[in-house]
Length: 402
Image (cartoon, rainbow, N blue to C red; front, side, top):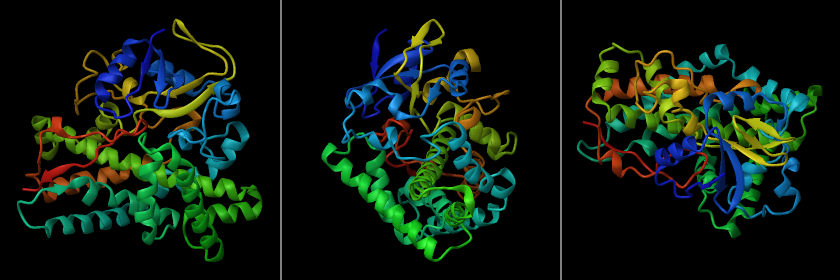
């Protein structure tokens, strides 16, 4: 099996995803830093493995970890070994931790956040409208980033004064270019910041999910301080990064497909279709790290060996022709059915999926209603991916509002 090295600079994600699919449903890959693992690259096989009890999250199953081959200053260590949370446990422990979060993020409860999301969106658009006409605007920094960060922070009870530090630390956390000597301190700083937030909520609880997690631990759900801190970090990280990329990628897709943009702006196609097709065609999460095989597992005509690590390559399987037909590589907001798994599948599906869809469903139509003449300020070919193996993220999105 030929090993495919994932590009730490993410210069050509589409080309890399195509090479992964061409390698078959199970590809042997090399993560930045020379770490070996396997990737599932096809939709059907990914669904199967995401519900296979022989695939676990316990890093101690990983043979390379047991042998001491994964250094603690590996740039992706925070994604491979982020501490105890629902991201790293299975079975009863996973259900216990996930249930508390899922109860706060049901579709019905998320819908109650709509008015607040609409108000935040309007405020962001007002700030954009106040800028001098004709200037280039970084739509990511000025619109796509503030909305999800403000929403998830309000949900979790995080003070806006912490946003700049969070942004700085998460930039290092996700980047493959963080110098190894800075990784341990970055992880310690993230832990200290979230511990401070939890301690503050323990002293002054509010109507937020962090306070609810603390209360649950005191009422008999037996969450440890580590689990609360790590759950807070997980929700903040996943709760804003994915939505930022979803909004940015949808704008790029619409701007590079003007006929489809016209269809949605004319009301011929609902915005829901834009969101779902963006999630499939240019998914916010390119690869999810990392799970481990407790025994040999057949995947198509190949075998995932016992003790090996597995990543799920959502960027590859979103354009799997076996699932989405011969036009899988095309952006098509009229696609039906559109059964992707961009938010995962089975018991580990992202509990924040409804919130991300709601935020994009408010932000995108409001943006185009206010600025229907919006245009990219540079050719799409000049937009630059950030060096993040797990997130399909751009450095910036320069636009002219029109």
